[in-house]
Image (cartoon, rainbow, N blue to C red; front, top):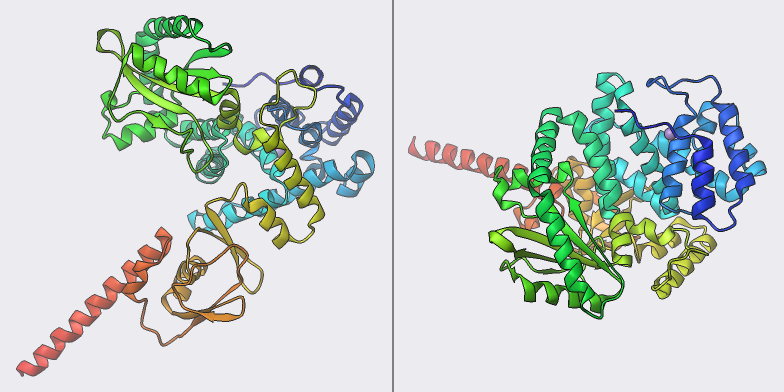
Length: 499
Ligand code: MN
């Protein structure tokens, strides 16, 4: 089960290969410092502690993130584990690297899992870290992933806690950031510990399917390559992709365990160089094989909320077999695997042509703006454009941040704070102005909920505008009781009348 331990030489080799003129001296110094800081310490797996920052750093380099992030990955636990301070790191490695290490260290103290009720708070902490520097979240993911990979060394109760936290907090955030590679690994890594029997069952299903369908899929790939080679499409890659185990588990539950309803156990991915070629490839497939009705999805024209783009189609091939195709450009592919992180990848001097330069310029601009804005509220304004498209951030007068879906109202806000605050709320002051409870809140609003302790409970009419499931459930729960109470009173009244 153990992943091979990475050595420093492997890391340096990868960096030298991936980056143009990398500052290997800084990388070496960081490793030397980390090695000294963790000297003599052993992980519960029996491996030396230094193997952990090495693995984290290696992963960040594999993602091609900027070298400062890779260096910070080596140093991410030294402040925690040794007398070395952030100030020391600042002197030796500069503000940026020290800042990354500081942010990751802070996040570690912030994210303490204490039951599901802390979920929202943990999410917010991650979002705050993201808003200040999204690179910190990439580091946190790489850190968590290696901890999951080496979870077998931990005692049982800790395995369970870490796996649950990864599945419930980290994986959804990775998903929201469009980082499906991380999300998939976090999910499968946790799944193995949380539902070991189901994990084994899914693994068996996939093993059998891969054995059954392997030859068929490679025949399809050959045919597609032949079809494509006869067109004007020049650059293309065609390969098979196997569904991830947790994703299969979720889908099977959705279809009451009916495996025959799942068409994308094994899919074929076609990667081309531009959008026109995507549509051309789709047309080509449909000319050749009959599409299954209702299964053509144009996520290029209508991207998913996390930015995912691709064309999906399912077709009938030879002998009534059914197979799903996913067609996308290389950019879309990178975005699908790395999500937001793909914009932060190190591109300078790479051999790959940079097609989407406008987007990169925009992001460079955003990053520059972020640097110039010291104020969190201002930074939030800037970040909103990108990561937090369908979420808003609203503040309490004390400065606590509540994240809510777009269109949320003071009622959602009140229930997010506490059920009692929700049940007793009568009005809200938004940016110091009195507003109705159905007012649509905007990111950056400062909201103060006015409560009335004599209020008996929520108004069922709030369901017309409350947006979060949490608020809606609480309103329903509470009004159910009120109605029951009201009935009881009416009945009592009748009893009295009878007498
Ligand atoms: Mn760590």
